[in-house]
Image 1 (spheres, helix red, strand yellow):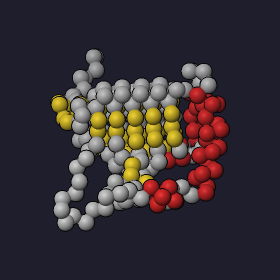
Image 2 (image 1 turned 120 degrees about the vertical axis):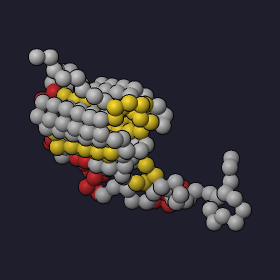
Image 3 (image 1 turned 90 degrees about the vertical axis):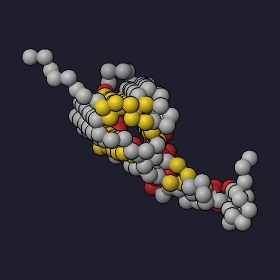
Image 4 (image 1 turned 180 degrees about the horizontal axis):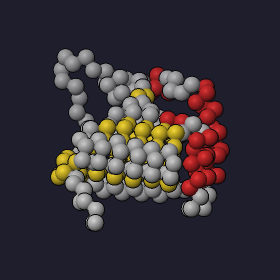
Length: 196
């Protein structure tokens, strides 16, 4: 294990008691989390084509969900009241939207199967490791491919593609394809014109 250099003011132990005693959620959020946990089987056990039902259920819990959005039943959305999804977007099977902070997904966006949008982290420089909730913003016309990870505080620009299994920890420029871990730009995304 690497230690801080001599004379560095770093503490050598984490304060897990302070971490567990820290107030992470309001009482209102705690109640909403419990109710969403109770309601989640109604979401997950709904038949695959019941997109309108799942949109309604998400809206009931405070999500802002546009028209024609397809959220698949095996998708997991934590704290939906922090989620906004634009029109014609889709969230695939086993995708995880961990919305401790705000997660904004634009219009015509595809979040593919097993992708993970994580709007929560900890301040690892603080011995109590307090919870942080940096927002995620996904622009319009974006594709987050299968198994990709988008970290807290990241903005993915309009038209960008995050390749399969990429790990995005920094902002992605519009109309750029990124890949790898950590994700790096690999090419521009240029749409072909439609056939006449």
